[in-house]
Length: 361
Image (tube, rainbow, N blue to C red; front, top):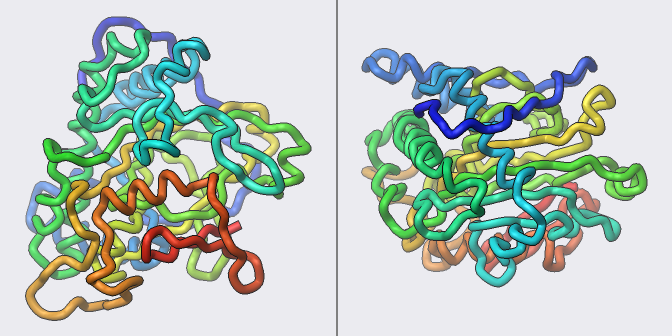
């Protein structure tokens, strides 16, 4: 990705948390090793182990320098901090109506708990930036964002999909045709900001900013940032923080990958909580690339030679939704539809078509 004019105000993130927090011990995958057969085989084993253990891992040497990554965060702040509320309304994604993440999701759009609504704003862009118009302040940077999107898709997502396949002992390209850059689909780039909340809201939600959930795509790529708020459920059942590694990526699997692999790779449960005291009062700016299979793909286990090594299907093959159906159902329902308590009340469930979806509080 080039670093070029026009200039952009520099975004200064929060300092790193000074507290001693309980961080998850996550594997670090070095994509610089992907270029040789020996390196690729070693990485495939590491990715498989990381996904089967905690479902999250870091990626380093992904092809962008720290300076290039800083530039992306500078641009990410533009649609959130430099566009008027009036103009934002023109690009409202109206996600409840469309079932699509394109445009703005305004603050207080989702119900969190006990009458508290979210303080999360994001601006979403389809991988095809021409699908929608964009705010005027962002338009001079669309060329660089196109480069960034293609880098995420071809230089990060595709190698990861190959490693995931090799980790299962199947042909490395099996997932690639279903993540076609030019096909009709909703793979998208997100710029997201969490804003500080009132103490009353924190008490009512027990400091949870976004309930435990799984992503609904195949692979989620998060560009690491310093505010300690993201947590995942570890194998021992405890929530632990994801630490910040400068210029690294944080990777996790979503529902679509779980469905396509018959549960071999499980979608990872994660949530966002109030940052520790040293970071309270700071905004949390995030950059994400959410990959989804093409809209018309039925989310049933892919045909492979022989049986799947693990078969934990969550629905019958004939009930498999397409990516479009499942994506629309999840987006429309999230934070705006009724859920039911399950078991001891720690889990809330809802049906998306014939798929049971769980939220963890």
